[in-house]
Image (tube, rainbow, N blue to C red; front, side, top):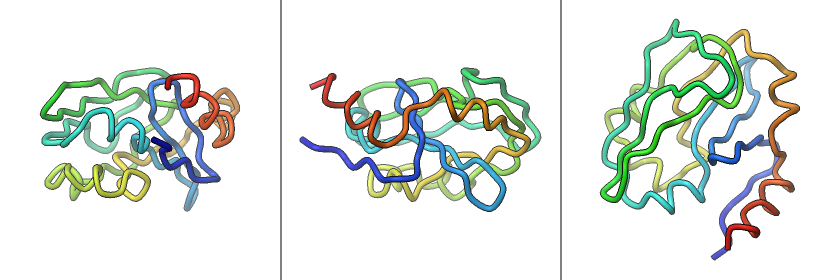
Length: 129
């Protein structure tokens, strides 16, 4: 099954996505990740003001199948947490790329250069099939 991989996003090998918008780095999980997890039932993410280094766990996501850690694709400070998604985590299953988890400020553009772009992530997913 082909999974959505929109242009303009950066991806980690653990299937988090990041995109720049409004001077912040928006972070969520990919369509592949939500599909692999199945029905998402709970989300534990930190509050605004939390500092993260690249690769730090910033909480976890729970589905009927598993609990998985979430990892920061870039370092920075959490500017905003998506409280609506915490109250309705099933939204991630419906729209993985419209369902951001956190937004980072003061992030490193150098970190983004170390992530996969959309084309590279698409190839990475093919290697997992």
